Length: 196
Image 1 (cartoon, helix red, strand yellow):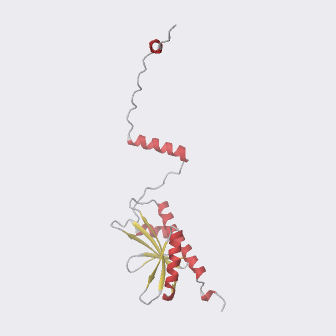
Image 2: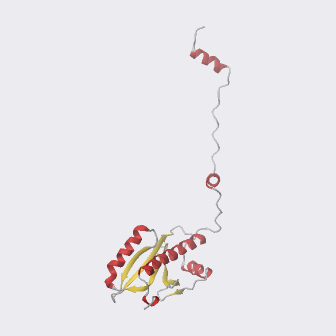
Image 3: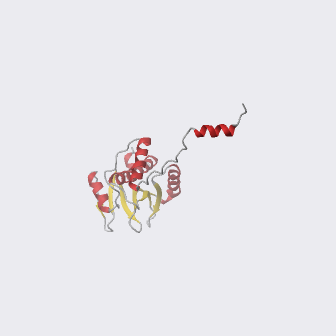
């Protein structure tokens, strides 16, 4: 019996029905697609707790409410800027940008440094900035020639932030600034704290 590959294929096909292409699935709405993607991500990444509040713009009132909720004392200065003391260091909370969408937590070390140590302190700030993301560390030289060391954490919140995210950003600015100032305290011990 001669082999006829084409003929045997035709014979095999004759016994089976012609496959019908699958029908196109009905188009899903954006909400259905969102739900399916959320379900897939939850299954793959683990279920996360849903947000309890929606992102909203940051305002001085929200920052003040956070300070009150966490039992921190704060003040509003003559320029309307919100500030407070954290572990004995002065911190300010600024909102910059066209729509006040950039939150900046700026701290100032509680001691001044002599101008003769400016280069040394700049090296410390540069080393810190090279090794760490937060805070940005820098100095300001005042008109009296004294050097003030500053920490800064800035975040663009153009699309708003919920309360938990705001709390995390404020704690980040305060705690990382304090870590930097603690490192300065170790480097430059306070003469009043040491034995004569």
